[in-house]
Image 1: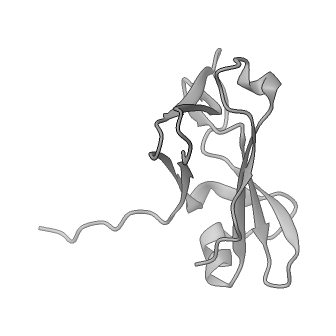
Image 2: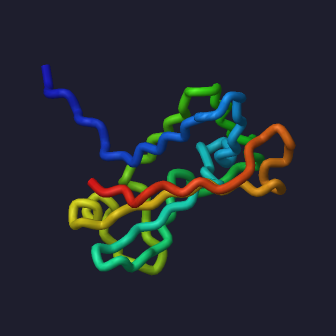
Amino acid sequence: MGLPIPPAPALRLTIANAGKLERHVLLGGMSDVGPLYATLHFAAISPDGKRWKMLYSGTVAVGDYAWPMIASIMPNKECVIELTLKIFWIAGGPKETLKLLIDAGWAVETSIEVTPEQAGSPSRWTGKLVSGKMRY
């Protein structure tokens, strides 16, 4: 019997509903090749405070159609998304993996922003939420 394989390092995002009504939050779309997190935005922040846009490349191409991916979050409940650190990359920045940058003292900031045009339905949540700087 072999040793258990540890889970891959991941960025865990938790969106909590602290309100009294169920919230429907558009996360992006689901295509034939996987999820497209179109409303999630990421930044990598170096130890000296320089910010870099960070992209998640969990899905490289879209097939013919993407279905809306909506998190329905009940009051006092949460939606948890785990994104492996291996497929983040920094636009125009360092080429190291995100795991190496985090180990070197970099921080990550995540935001979700849904415009009324993206929401497409008055019953879906719109707005912007920004995390604090997350460090390991």
